[in-house]
Image (cartoon, rainbow, N blue to C red; front, side):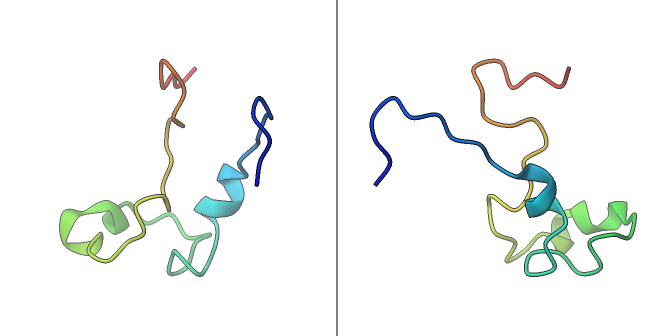
Length: 58
């Protein structure tokens, strides 16, 4: 259990390059994001902008 007020870090790079979630994770493959290719994908396997208050890219 995580104590209240604890800060957590998420290894987004590790998730985005995990072969358990992605076929050929090191390969540039924009087609992996086509709707027909996302069926069955874990909903947290791709975190492009995190989940912060502003979900800021910069």
